[in-house]
Image (cartoon, rainbow, N blue to C red; front, side):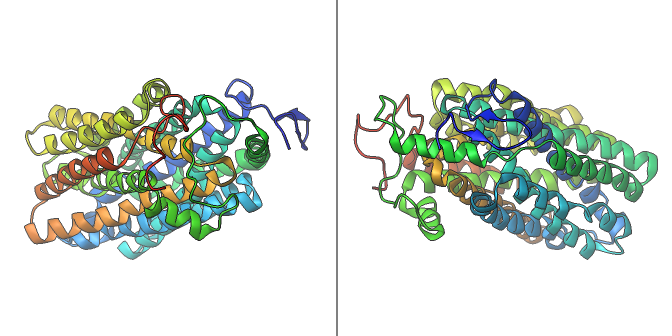
Length: 447
């Protein structure tokens, strides 16, 4: 199959790659990831802040409080791994649909929850939704866009998703105030999930044929001046284990990216589970907490409109490294001052750092993963990245438990980001094929 091959559906289109050429489907995928962000955002402001009052978590039970994020991270990480490989077998659309089916019980479980265990169970289902659905929105966009648009593509994807997270945090804060925690989340959650299911069933198209067309083109194409530095120590049709070991340790570029992805999720785990509780204990009301936490989501999401595109011009490596350090600095700022405006500014700086690194770590993986197993590579990177929720939340719970205060968790995350950024700087390299093409310097690391 080539780029001029056809897709069998209601109409017959040529499988040309590019945002403009596939604008309708690109917009549908943006709507999908925004809805995925809504689903995640409804759990990030109200639920942690009212864990004690509404769901019976004893004050000071930091490890129990973080349990739902640990569960989310482990489940989402594993499902990212599964989603990438599964989508290469049954298609992207079916995996997306399975993700939304998994989310359907979540609003009801929150509404009827008699205790915190139900919230943990609901978060497990949310992790399945996120692992399957968010992975597919990213993979599908990469299928239908060109190599020189990868930074922009992932930037737009993450912009839509994390603006969705920020908006949902604010809306659910007001909804909980107006209707009560349980009813407010039930109305919001059902609206999101049902809308997503309808859009997926009737308007989203499977993009796997585009990936197959690109793989066929790559296999027959002549060498170009900007050939990516694909790993050479792997077979043309690798097994799952081959790809996993390559991503995890055999190629030090991929391993450096994967560890950075894992550690940057410490920031998100902190903002999710500790930051709202920290603010609530400081006397900040739910609506204001929604705006402060939303500043992180908006800065992260909104800036990715530019940071993803920026990396298409200046490369991935330095935005990733500087993003790790900047986000860690924003986290440390939270406990270096006080007041709503200070905390909002600190959250925004952490979000700006995340915007520099978040789309560009994924773009770096996409740069050097061949199209025939790119879905698996992205899935395994996302496995390690979202496992960071679990490791991060567990670390946060332990630090808070043994220190007896929440301030230590912010320093733990800031230090982790500093060290991880150093490792990424030392063991990673520029992956953009125009800026560091294969065949013009030493072989890629890990070979």
